[in-house]
Image 1 (tube, rainbow, N blue to C red):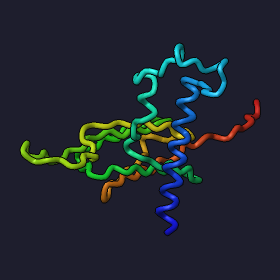
Image 2 (cartoon, helix red, strand yellow):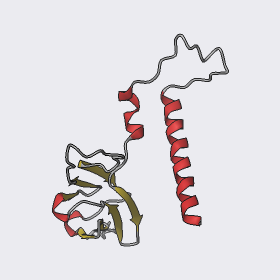
Image 3 (cartoon, rainbow, N blue to C red):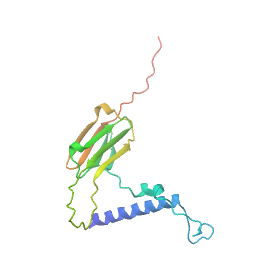
Image 4 (cartoon, rainbow, N blue to C red):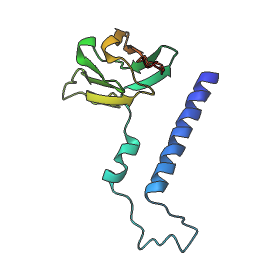
Length: 161
């Protein structure tokens, strides 16, 4: 029973975070007549708050290990050939496309939640990596990147002759 409750707690926290972000864009207090005037207060435009409601695809974990950085990305329903991974010394970009069957026009769709189309996500890494030695695997809708950290040479004093 712990897993469903933790998922609900995560969702509640997400709603609270988005509410805080909205208040930062358009702060108001309906109980304070100095800050809230229904005649002058304007709702933020969709353009201003659209990013608050976007689902980040793919979802990722970034794990900073001793010798490398591990990036795990969930890309369910995406074929291996539809994924492109680009690595720089400080970032990873995962691009892809999700394709779904089209339904006949006479079918009545009761619920339509599965997104199709292209996506792109760039993640800034916590440390510089050696992008030439990056390794990627794909299995069961999960992309795993193992990114070796760039070796930073130690400072050495050089004796003058």
